[in-house]
Length: 469
Ligand code: 6PG
Image (cartoon, rainbow, N blue to C red; front, side, top):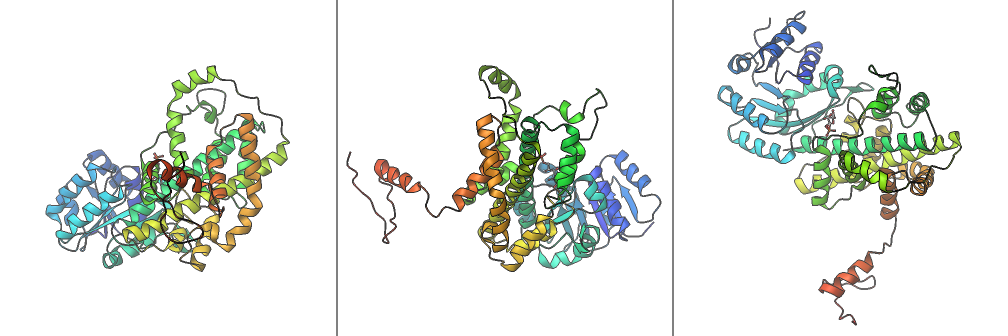
């Protein structure tokens, strides 16, 4: 056993245990801590063939086993537990030690904790970690924010354990304060959008195209070989293959259609509203999880209203249109999330480099996708790019796929198949690319009933009219 260990980790659930083993695989020694003795023992057993892993349920032993400045990562559920773990560690820490919160903490909590710990001379990092249990074990995408100087101590370990995209680590210092948690929050908002879109495409392929689970598996596998290549498309193709253990059917058909959520998508939407940045595809993805939860009401309502039977379509042509539409809507979802990041960076002083963010999302994380290489390039070419839709490199990609989205949205509307994410992405595109919107009328109405004033197209100034009633 080593005398002191390079890295400490509190919270030995699946994620924590996997992260520690990953650290050890990469040549660093790591010490785990959890109140639960069973988890401590499990880790010691699992890491037993190496002298690089150890663990204790005692906080003091844990802290004293670490090399200074101590680098302690917390992988515990977001919320009050993070505060109580910090309080438990504090009496044993020295100035200059580093605590890294690797959970999905709300960014204002991270700001509060950072300020609190700064007074005590402790560096605090909010670091989003994406990739689920497998990512933690084999290489996640890591999104750290906090003190730039302190990051130098963590950097070698994070770079070693993170996922690699063509040899480049999927981790980078993102910015001060809660930059890391904020970026992870928006990552999850994008994740919600992409998942909603994928579920709609599944629905329409099944109901209109009549694709069986076997055909859906093949279709998504084929897509995963092309421009839609991504983690979510890949796992979707695998999901359609999974047989049910309890019946003769496929598992996907037996799963209740109520999607749960832990809050990060909702926070993304709420914060986008606060910033005044439109992210409607993410908003609707959150709303759809809420609608999905109303299963009993949906069953009652389904009995009250008729729905057209989907018109027959040419399967191959229809499948090719869905590929184009999904590609289009994925671009729009990333565009909205990146737009939010650009604005939040100014508002909260994060100094985010969007090219760096897209770069560390290319592997390891849930939203990793081939198109992130193009997004990285777009932001590296123009780091002040306001919206992906304004990047010359995306114009052709969007132009060549938007019409398929139009066709599918019309088909869905005419045939009673809800495509809220796709239609939202399309509406966002049509509105964002309209130099003239009808909101002049809203201004007129506001001025009419509330003297709220308006501006004019042809001259500067603020105007009010005594409207003829
Ligand atoms: C990740 C995921 C991860 C978590 C989601 C699930 O990047 O690894 O985003 O953090 O699985 O947040 O969120 P919901 O439970 O809200 O769907």
